Amino acid sequence: MKAQFKTWLHVALLAAGVAVTSNTVQAADRQFLNVSYDATREFYDEFNQSFGTYWKSRTGHTVNFKQSHGGSGKQARSVVDGLKGDVVTLALANDIEEIVKSGQIDKGWQKEFPHNSAPYTSTIVFMVRKGNPKQIKDWTDLTKPGVQIITPNPKTGGLPRWIYLSAWGYALKQPGGNDAKARDFVSKMYHNVKVMDPAARASMTTFAERGIGDVLLTWENEAMISKKTLGNKFDIVYPSMSILTEPSVAIVDKTVNKNGNKWLATGYINYLYSPLGQDMAARHFYRPRNEKILAKYAKQFPALKTFTIDEVFGGWSKAQQTHFVNGGVFDQIYNDKR
Image 1 (tube, rainbow, N blue to C red):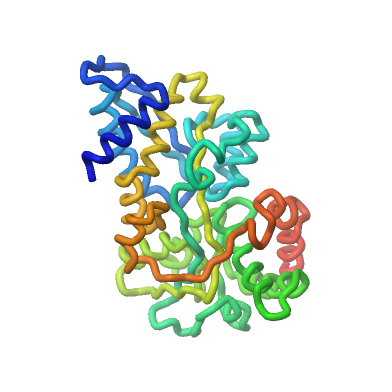
Image 2: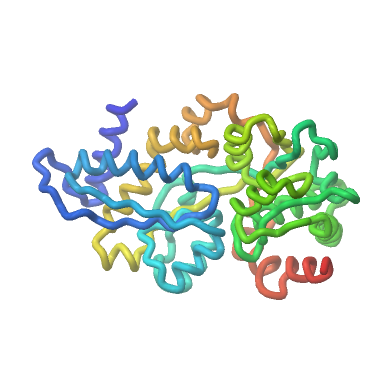
């Protein structure tokens, strides 16, 4: 597999315009910043080391990789406000579109890489206390009196917007479902929210370390990592259906055109789609796009009925405008809660 990957990346680098020779000249260390969301810390720590080693072996260039993490929406705003990321790897496409509006990422970015520039997927699951004392098995159980929910704030993070839309889509897909019933269902669910942190990792801390709440709504990969690292304290509950989450990646064109990192950024994102990158994603509990790698980890990822944001909401732009802008449906629901 390693030999195949070297050939693949060699071709990819040549296609990107990078001269790849055995007689490379040592260059000064390059600085490279990936602006990402909260739940990717451990994955990109390993990914940066792996890609950096490979890049140096093929080009002779040493790269000083840096990471920035936080709520996806907040991270997008940081780039808009001047944070000089070379690439962004954010929780949802709409956050990248906000950067496009600022002129720092070119339009058409989703066509630059496969699968609309979303190299891996995930979904929304429930983390509950060991033994599931409140017997939370599906979305409807989240609206029951006395159930305390922990979830991040949709105004600052990408995960909570996926959560909100997953609950809304579930309600729509029930017999006789419509927008009025979905709004009522989601409103009841948010009335049970005990703590609404600004980002996914903060919500995990509230639930797992501070011991607050009966159920945490989170990424599948975050739940799996926590169950692995925190021992036998929690169970993972898969609802009957959930949304297919597609974290997106893009090159920050304005930054790399200025600092000369265009080809490095292209190689970096291509590496995410390589067999090694896909296997690494799976080991960090993201669902890889590569079908062979996904099959290799089939036992790790339970089958789940999912729907897409395009299918139910007509895409991120429409969902954002309806639900998450100031004064949108989420604000109306949350203000009613208070």
